[in-house]
Amino acid sequence: MKNFEILTLELRNITPTIIGGYKATTFSPSLGIAERFRVSELKGVWRWWFRALAAGALWDAYGSVNENCVKESVRAVLGSTKAPSKFILQAYPKKEESPKPLARDTSLPPRLSLLIRKKDRDKRNIENVRYYEAGDLEYSLKLFKQPRMELKGDELRTGIGSLLMALTFQGVGAITRRGFGAWEIKVCEDCVGERYASELEDYIRIINELSRVKSHEAAREIIKKLVQLANNDFSRFMGVSGAERGGAAKDIPPFPLVSMDSNIFRFSIRYVRASSSMDLLTKIGAATLKATWKRRLRHPSHSSEIHTWILGLPRGQKISRDKGVQKHGYMVDYRIPEFGRRPSAIAIHPLKRLLNDGWICLLYGFLSRDWPEVLYHISLERRRVERLVEIRTLDHIREIFNEAFRKVEECLSQ
Image (tube, rainbow, N blue to C red; front, side):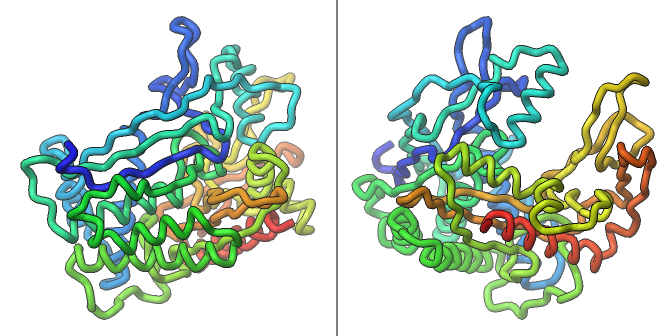
C-alpha cells in the first residue's frame, strides 16, 4: 500500500472519550473487554461533514439544495453500498489504556450525571459504562488511495478537506457536541505521499499551525482559513465556483450545512479556564443548561420562556412520584411517552490545552429549519402543559438560535 499512501495523521485524545458498542454500552462484563475506537465510526462522521460541505456550496450559490445531487457527490467520493470509496482509512493504535469506570462520588459533567441516573433507574450496572481519560488513546490514522480507482484532484481535496473538518470540529464516541472525544491532530511529515505533498500543502500547513497554536486569537484565524479552503474546494467540485451567491438573506437551509454565511454556519473561538479535562467538560455542559442561564444571566423565571430546545431534543425527563411516572420539560407530543429526538444545533469542541489551565474551545452552530412544527413544555411546578407555537417561523428560529449561541458564549467565558 506504500505506493497508494496519501498521508498519515497522528491523533491523541485530549478530553475523556466514551465509545459505545452496538448496544450503546461501553463495556462487556461477560467478555471483560471495552469498546475500542473504530474507523467505521470516524467514516460516518467524515461522510456527514462531506455532505454538509457539498450542500453548503449549493446553498451559497443558489439559495437551495438539491439533495439528490448532494447524495451523489458523497457516493462518488466516499462510496456507497454499491461502490467502494476512493479512499482507504486505517487506524493503528500507538497507545490504548484501559477505560475507567464512572465514579458517583466525584463531580461529573451534566450529561454523565444524567447517564448515571438513567442507568440506576433502569437497574443496569453503571460499571458497564466506562470512559478513556485524556491521553489514554493515541493512533496513527493512515489514508490511502483506493487501488485501481482514479482519484481526481478535486476529489482528493474535497476528501481531505472534509476529513480535516470532521476531525477538527467533531470528535468520536458519545456526547461529542459537549466536548467529549476531542483529538489533538498532527501530520506525520515523513508519511505524506510524494505525489500528494504539493497538492495538499495548504491543508498540511493549516493542521501544523493549529497543532502549534498558543492563543485563541491565532486559532480563530486558522479555523477561518480551514473553512474557507474547504468551501472553495467544494464549490469547484460541485461546479458552482464563481457563481453568483444566491442564498436569500431571509431564508434558512432545510438542514444543517456548512455555509460561508456566518448567520447560517456560525463559529467562535473561546478561551476557557479549567483545571482538568473533566472540569472543562463540566463547564461546557453547564453552559447549555437552563439553570445556568437563569442563575448567571438573570433570565425570567418561566422555564418555558428559556428556549433550550435549540440545544437538542429531548430536553425532557421522567421522574417517579406518588401518582406514577411524570414527564416534564420539552417534548414533541405530551400524549405519548416518547420525547422525540433532534441533535443540538450548537456544539462546543475543545481544540487545545494551553499552559496555566487554559483551553482553546471551538463553539459552532448550524441554523436550519428541520425542527418539529410544534413543541410542548410541561412544567412540573405549575402542573400544566404549555404549547410553544410558531417555532418553524423563520424569524423565530433565527432569533432563538442567535440568543442561544450568545448565551453559551457568555457562560463559557465566565
